[in-house]
Image (cartoon, rainbow, N blue to C red; front, side, top):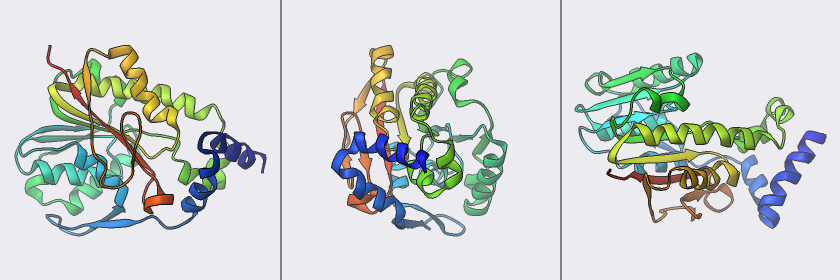
Length: 255
C-alpha cells in the first residue's frame, strides 16, 4: 500500500491535476489497431505505438536498425516500409524477448521480406562502439518505467521506487548516444518510450543536447494525435485513448 501511495505522490507532483485522469485512463482499455496490409496474418498493437515507427520515415532499400525491437510490432512496420531491398537489424538483449521477436517476424512477414531481417542480441547501450555511421534509419524504443503496466501489476508496483526513473534515464541516454553513433550522416533517429516521466523523455534528449549538441538537429513533427513537448510528441490515453507513447525525431549532422 505504501508503494502505491509513493507512486501516486511522485506522479501527481509531475502531472498535478491531470494525474487522476491519466491514472483512470491507464486502468481502461487501450485503443488498439490492426496491421494487415502486406502481412501474412494480422498483428494487433496499441495505436500510439505505430507513430514512432512511421516517424522514422523508412524508404525502400534503407539500412535500418531497431535497437530494442521486441515484441516486434514496430519491426513489422519498418520491415514493410523497407521492402525486399535493404536490411533491417532487429536487436534485443533479452533471449526470451528475442524468441518472441523471431516468432512475430516469421509468422507475419512474407519470406521475401523476413529474409532481410537479421535478429541480434547485443547491448543497445554499447552498439555505437562497434558499428558507427552504418544506418540510414535507427529506432530506439527504449526500456522505460512503463507506468501503465506498473499500475496494473502488484508485482511491478512493489519493485517501483522514486529512483527507478532516474536509473532508467541514465541507461536510456547511453542507448540514445549509441543510436546517434550508429546512424549515417544525414540519417534519422527516433527515440521513443511508453513512459510519462519527463526525465525519461525530453530529459534524455536534453542531456544529449548538453553532451553532443553539434552532432544532430531535432526534426520538428506535427502530431496527428497527441501533444507537443519541448522536443517531441507525447500521446496520452486521457485525451486520445491510446498510449502512453513519447517520441522524438533527430537527424544526424554531416561532418
